[in-house]
Image (cartoon, rainbow, N blue to C red):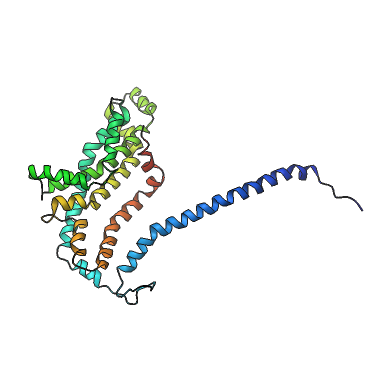
Length: 293
């Protein structure tokens, strides 16, 4: 009877196998934590959307039933039967592009300056721009209201455009600035050495490379203007109603299911536009915009 012997290959692979097993044991809690977080985020993010989708068609829905006992389209007919809905949608679809274009004209040159120039107070100005979206805006809107009354901007389209611009500045400045900063200066220098002027270098080299980040900023700025409700309601109502402010009027006179219908309608532009730029957002353009140094 012979004793079992191990080959040199088996002896060498034993420590490797042990290390793999220890690594797998250590990674198990990490994997469990990852999947638990993923499930929690899915429920947290998708749960309200599923509830809205069901509530928008619910007739009678009583606790503790998981689903409505009856279904109806009455809430949709209430929303689309409102005579002020279509004018509000038209106002939103007209004002939001205007606000986005004005924001581009004001902020894109500033973003290029932040990316290419080093001047005193640069970081402080960037922080001040970010601060416009870092805190609740209602206090700012109330402060602006007194100024708007003095300038006769209350109840005007100009006043609404100014209010909606506040929500777009941070996107249209930070993200394009990071996109411009990511363009290698060596490429621009090579183009100028080849005889290209400043404008040709910008539109042939700088802008095409920075375009994905600028596109993300444009989409997010449009959505910020389209979804802005508090300042628009404070400045424009009752003379001018946009789609979000019209929701306030509807849910004040109808059951809560109407707000579910309107929430779905408001989410459609956001979902479509975010799907259009999802590759650039997931690729890091949005995160890079808040890492500008």
